[in-house]
View 1 (cartoon, rainbow, N blue to C red):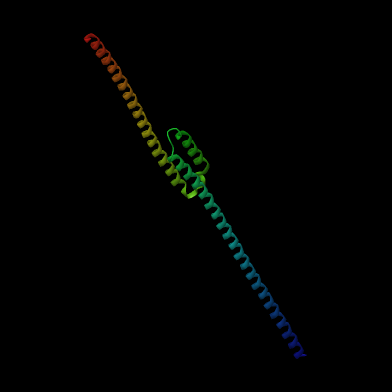
View 2: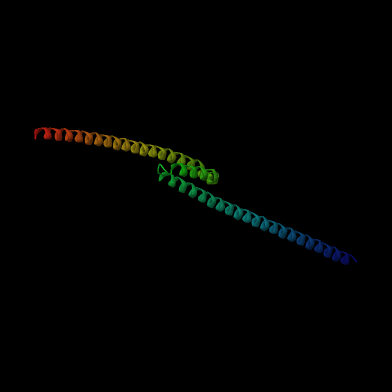
Amino acid sequence: EQAKRRLEEEFHRQKREEALRREAERKRKEEARKKQEEIRKKREEEQKKQKELAEQRIKEGKAVFLLRKAIQKLTAATPESMEIVQKELEETMKLHLEEAGSQKDYMKGEADKYLEQTKKRIELLNEAKRKAQEKKEADEKRRQELEARAKELLAELSGLLDMAE
């Protein structure tokens, strides 16, 4: 009877140990699954973040390209096209400057710098045109004066020749 009881106790002890081992194994597997899930989520979040960064860089690149294109167009402006090109630059700045992200301040500075340089260049061109026009007018006036004086002298010479004959 004692041996039977010992056998039953041993059997129950082994069953409890087996149950504890199974529970420990289940917990270990659950923890491993949770860890794998966390790793998967972190990987997905990182991929999402990388994708967003790439999209942002592309968006910034496009904005910077459009701003540079408008600035380049500005630098080639003539006195006749200056107003239109300046309005195009202002419109491009309104639409795309915020999208330039980290290069926003730099692009704003570049636009301001080239706008100022172009205005000075246009001013110099206009001044040169004005001076050339003034010189042309002065030359024309001088030519007309010389032509009139030549006609006077010719008439006077003609009169003198007529008297001399």
